[in-house]
Amino acid sequence: MKLEAVELRRIRMSLVAPFETSFGTQQERDILLVKAITDEGEGWGECVAGEEPDYSSEYVEAAQHVLVHHLLPPLLERDSTAAHDVAGALRRIHGHRMAKAAIEMAVLDAELRSKRESFAQFFGAVHTAVDCGVSVGIHRSIPDLLRTVGGYLDQGYRRIKLKIKPGWDLGPVRAVRERFGDVPLQVDANTAYSLADAEHLAQLDPFDLLLIEQPLPEDQVLAHAELAKVVRTPICLDESITSAQAAADAIQLGACKIINIKPGRVGGYLEARLIHDLCAKHRVPVWMGGMLETGLGRAGNVAMAAMPNFKLPGDTSASDRYYHRDITEPFVLVDGRLKVPDGLGLGVKVDVDYLREITTSQQMVQRREGRPVRVAD
Ligand code: OSB
Ligand code: MG
Image (cartoon, rainbow, N blue to C red; front, side, top):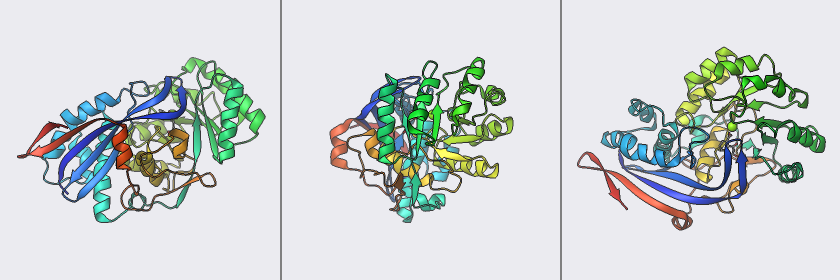
């Protein structure tokens, strides 16, 4: 397959409700979509980088810049590019995994559509629907939080994840346990604590949480292993796991018992699949994380979450958890699950009229006389 051109499109979408984490509050999203145009058809990718470099060092404007100037040119020079060539072709560029993941996803979508295969088939999915959890942001008050959690449980979500930070941890967890009993419950700190908080975090143990996600900064993998000696609740890593190598190291160090897989964070679905397989070999269960994706990213994530070692419900919530109107047909929660798309490639169709309405910019990068050039749109 020959990559002829790539369209970079930015869209603006409002979230149905503000989403507050230990690193900030989001109400609107500025999303970069990537369309791979090949001699065998087109494919879509979604970049999960946020507007600010607060979850990781990546951010949407930088992702677009590095794609245009550093990642797309070498890909557009190639005579033939399959998804499994992308990571290797881009290896000399360090980091920028979310940007790399977006173009690899678009190439994979185009490739699988032309081979008449779905993402689920390609990953070896073993389920036709996946169990879904929901990530609940930091709220202004406990009564507010209980209202939100109650609403999600009424909708059928099979697991609740509470965002926590110092000053918003034991109280919310206790309140949810008191009101809703033994619902599957976990917490996510997004790096907000230090190893000095070990005794404090151990006070979460009596609440029988499924896991505590990324309590310490991402580069403190060894400190997570130290924390695990004090805290009984299983530690799960998110931000720290940037590659299959990082996953192997963290497992060997005893830094985590569970891993959150986000394809964007690790450079793409192919690296994510390696992490899945590695974790299966080490009997480390994984679950699918989320980055507030649109229906495009959700389609790929739900397909991957149907692989056998995805043992816990994912942050793969329904479209209406995020957006009033999605850019694909909406993902709808049925009995706490989302159906795995079975169409070709990602198996979803982009609503191009709606996409046009919410587009804020468009840029084409294309091959011309063997040389990639930027074209204003
Ligand atoms: O840490 O899992 C996280 C959203 C943005 C950035 C980081 C995280 C999250 C979530 C939301 O928790 C998960 C979702 O998409 O529902
Ligand atoms: Mg997380």
